Image (cartoon, rainbow, N blue to C red):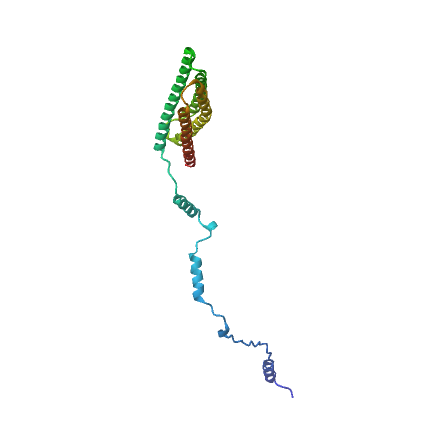
Amino acid sequence: MDKSILDNEDASTIEPSKITTDHSITVKAKQINVVSLPHKNSSVDSEKELDKDNQPPPLDEQPLDGNWLILSRDWQAQPFKKTDIKKLLKQTKRRTLWAKSLLAIDIIATLGLIIALTVALYQGGWGTATIAYFTFGALGSIVFVYYEIKIRLRIWQRSCDSPDKALDNAIAGVESSIKYIKLIKWSCWLLLPAVNFYIYAMIDESEKSPLLAFIFINFFVLSMWLVTHWFHKKRNEELSQLSAA
């Protein structure tokens, strides 16, 4: 017997539903042990972060104004001696006056020796030793005054009363004084054998003992050398201080 049309339709609708495919994937979840995880020390980390925030940046990363501020404070903290310009000007004027006075005295002494030599030669009878001593003294004094004028004029021509040049003038004045002191010390070494030769030559011409004159003249020359040496050391120290100012 042939099947009806209704039977064919029911078979077509039921048969496809019976064919099923299983494409699902099963994932097994793995449990995590929370107790075994390392604990983070929140307090230590927070302190490290605060210390990092409080630390100053490296020197090469600091702002330029901050570096200049530090340098200026260090410079201001260093001790220094301020140069007194008014004191230097007064000191230079006073020393210039003394130098001119000494130059005038040396010129007068030189003229006195020349006059004494002229009188001794004109009158005669003064003795050979005396005439030789006056000749040596007059010539030596002329040479001494020549170099003294040369030393003094070099500083007097360039000196001025300007406050801007006060330190330079003071240094030049001290250097001039040192040169003058050296000239006196050299003169003492030349004068010492001359006066001793004069005293020795006077033994034959005089009946008196030259012992007192010998002691007095040598003591005077050596004392003059020691005094000038003391001034020499004092002026060198002063020159060092002015050069460092």
